[in-house]
Length: 468
Image (cartoon, rainbow, N blue to C red; front, side, top):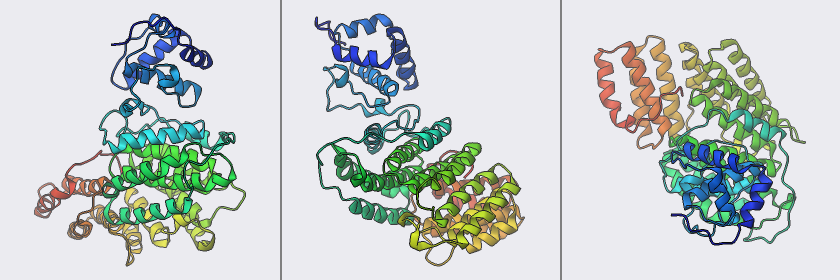
């Protein structure tokens, strides 16, 4: 129940509403719309808004929705307490209701870090509600324009809340990335979240802006990227997209154009995986533009990877010529690769990784001979188990398309055995997609029937059916 009128006008709420430019009726409409998107409708009207202005306290859920609406309108974080809603227990953050329905590029760095904290809290709670599993297919254009043409935050003064050690963040992120490659994102997600919430987020309280702290923002953007990949690999696509987008704002604050480009390419990879191929093309091209926006020349290795993302999206669209042009450009860039000027996070991307991207392209274009040729180049000794499992299943699909069922089934079995206890939603979908294709082509073949039984444990907890 909302509290009774206490006789004192709520000046804080009045000031925020005035700055937002919303009328009482418009605010009531936005509250109804936002609460409906969150699947918990609130029947507000302008009369209720007048009561809140006069001092009546709304229910806790309503207060959080009001704060979310004003945050979006003012392009900064607004809390219920800042609205003068003092009956809200600050120890109960209602993280479920605070994860925004739509994905938007943050207007300022404070909004980005606050949103990351809210997201990580909800993600750590394994909140299965509204937004964490829901990918926003309409966000790409706003994210691209927000990053490429947005403005930086104004510097502010402050006192460091804790020692700022960007190198420690990077070392921890790199160690957890190695673990992710070996065991899958579902294994590393909890470790990443614990480190991010307890060790990194507290650093941002009262952090002054300026060049001296760019490394902190850059290192945290790398960690947000890793959180995004672990969520992506675990099938939590709404969370993954938000980590990438909020990390993008941190990269902008750090003036780290290459990392910003990498995050745009991650969004391209995810859009392609989820079947939004046109968005994937645009995001990959935006990544290439962003990489060239810095004062220093972009490393050839990073540009090769971003161009490979464009090739994969074009292959998904069936554009064989466009894909071939992009792959050729990526190969030429790799020929000029200079590891000495590459950022540390691109060290894993080599000729084998580029061959793996090409194998995916030719699989999607249904060119079995080329799929097999590049798959062979993509799995040198030392390749992590998840990557080898992915490439093995891509190779098996190429063999299936080429009419070589015996080889296809044997290669798929080998990939599943190689993966072992890999905890990855993406891996499970690769297995499931291959099995579905084999069943569609050879529904009564004994080899396929046996394969269905063999792979059943691997494709438990199946995710969405969009193209990989």
